[in-house]
Image 1 (cartoon, rainbow, N blue to C red):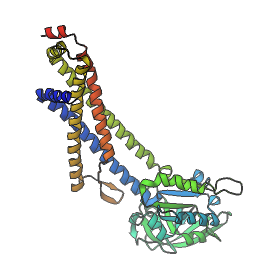
Image 2 (tube, rainbow, N blue to C red; image 1 turned 45 degrees about the horizontal axis):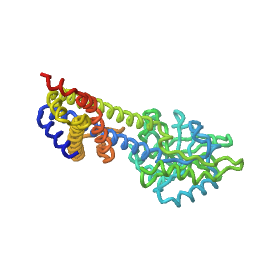
Image 3 (cartoon, rainbow, N blue to C red; image 1 turned 45 degrees about the vertical axis):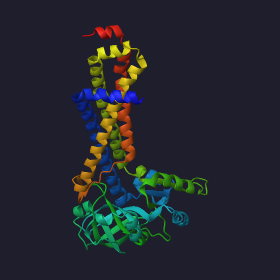
Image 4 (tube, rainbow, N blue to C red; image 1 turned 60 degrees about the vertical axis):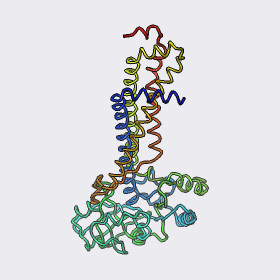
Length: 413
């Protein structure tokens, strides 16, 4: 094996220009794939962070059946006080949980005494909500970054359409679970930038104000949003919490709770999957480029060395040895190209991180800086793919070389 390696390296250096061009092509492919994977991965992670940390949370718990009817904000599917206490007791015992926030979600009418429109509201404990979705204060574009009793945070689109300003008095009218209507005056305490696009109509009030509007004797919660200490454990903790709550059933013997991660609640998950699919597509392109380039080089090497192949075959070299020699050349090309590509790719990613050149805007948050990172696993997988394809690409020319008749090869001009 050592001799084969030496012969392969020697043959590659005999044709320096062709070897250099092939290695450069492989390295460039590796660099582009590493760059795309790191930048797209960083963009995806940052967007997920923006969505989860400004609105959804990492996961949520609802009463069974609530999510299926969530667009209607059904008050009859709220979690009862006893269920809320049970759930909070379980969450308090979980070391993975950083914070959680109970919410009352309801729809109502928003009136400025001049105009009226519909609005979706979240009744929350401000201190718990700000810990669970820490980017919520950054969405408050006007007013104080807080929420007090008697105040309401309204979405920017609603404020602009209704000409509502900070300090204005407005009225929220809502129908409670029993069908009775109630209203309450609020002072506009802040204007919220939408986290879901220009159609976002979600506002925030204090949870005790929400109870008052809905005439709740005891607090009934629509959902509990949860934030974990480690975002990477969302999937595992979702399964764990689902298992812990699976034993809780209603009087009818049906499950009392349902647990959903952000992936099941946010449409952005589909975009994240598209980014992953594009990454796979780019890797396939790399495989195609490496395959064609290596195969072309090896075919040319066989045709240019026909007499050499005939000579080594005539002196008794077995076909398997000849095949191994050409396969080893392809292997060496793949290894050299992958190593150079990884080194240059890491250098480029390091420069991008230091310089902060890769930026984008997210709503009013300007010049968010991406921090591309290279996962060692991705580097190993990409390198392994390149080397494997290099070996596969060299097989056909190697088989052709190993099957040559020595006499015909020696007579080749």
